[in-house]
Length: 238
Ligand code: ADP
Ligand code: MG
Image (tube, rainbow, N blue to C red; front, side, top):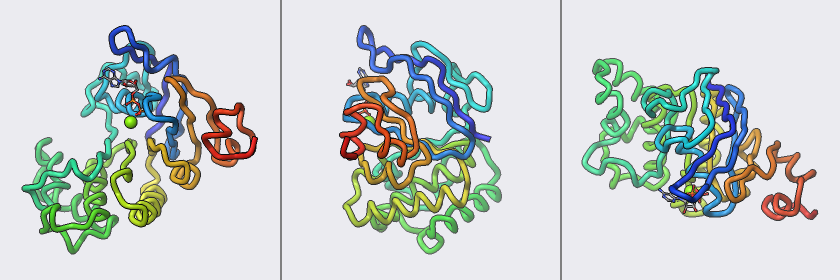
């Protein structure tokens, strides 16, 4: 399972409030995308869900359990970082297995899980390579593989494709869609790319200045934007 619920969630950095009373329910298996202009609070909200950032007020529930005060490692969600966060001195196999090794998993189990992730991501032939000997797309796959091996209840992506060139972004967009189809796991994905949002999401959450402006399917937002901000952001002619 991987149902995520936010209840009146707020974030303050000192006197500055950057997340302003967010209520949101995400069903198990749903692909939800956060969009909005730079600085609107997308990354902060995602980091609060992951546990990397403390929640100032409100509650975060995972499958009905209040996880607001739990550490990231206790929440069962995996954050996918941009590919430059790989360990340069480790090969693909060790990059993908590192978190399991740290958690003390048996060697055989690590091998099996890394093997399965490599198969899903088409990285079987690259397990002995170091990141610098991989293409940008392969590196991004390894970054995703690091999350897959942990068999999370949900994946959290923060603009995973933003440092790839345009052609690779399109390719990886299809890869991520395929990954969601294959695993069926809940995904929350932050982007400021409208095309990514419109093509990947079951539902899009449009954020502005720490508040939700509208939630809906890509089609709903396109055809019935609640306000001019959403219309302009999604690109429909309201
Ligand atoms: P986005 O990901 O949508 O671009 P962020 O979540 O990174 O936005 O940032 C939201 C707001 O919070 C911005 O005004 C940013 O400057 C501020 N902010 C983010 N992290 C911190 C921090 N650690 N300390 C103070 N302000 C922060
Ligand atoms: Mg951000």
